[in-house]
Length: 229
Image (cartoon, rainbow, N blue to C red; front, side, top):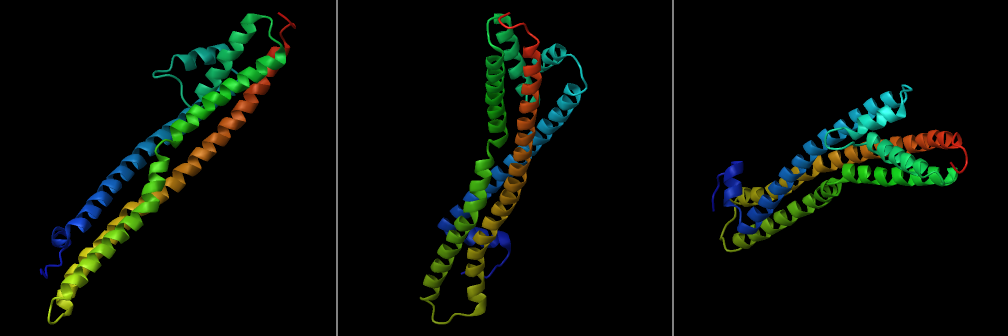
């Protein structure tokens, strides 16, 4: 049994099940960091776009001009602009019909905006469940590798006439590496999940507020139409 206690040597000398656990945790860690960086860019981009759109919206510009600008966005409008576009498109469609009641116009516009909002929130929440899964299960996977490694080590110790600290150190260290890798995969995933989930909730609250404010604006516009025209 080897007494080399360098980390790489301990990993390569570990039993096959423990090595498989380590490989699984390494893959989970890579996946976690990939999601973390991707989600960071997405949320930052979405927040910046929402800030820019809100500034343009509340500056008092023409809604038709703002609608055309949102419709021309490359790859389609996103975030708050997408919610505005869905509501204003529905408003234009219903007002062109000429025989739709004012209350129905507002209700249909609000429904269109809610559907767009749900799509936007779903886009932001995508992969967050994976982060939560990695964060909650990785310590247990690492613990399984540790238990297996220690169990295997004690089975080997049983066949030895004498057991010294030098002999025990290497196999026990091999097993404990699995726990360390489990924590290494879990901790960033849990921190990122909590942080990004909070940011998504904050954006969702902003979307809710905008939907209600814009619904009130559309209601005022609808009242200016002659009934039945």
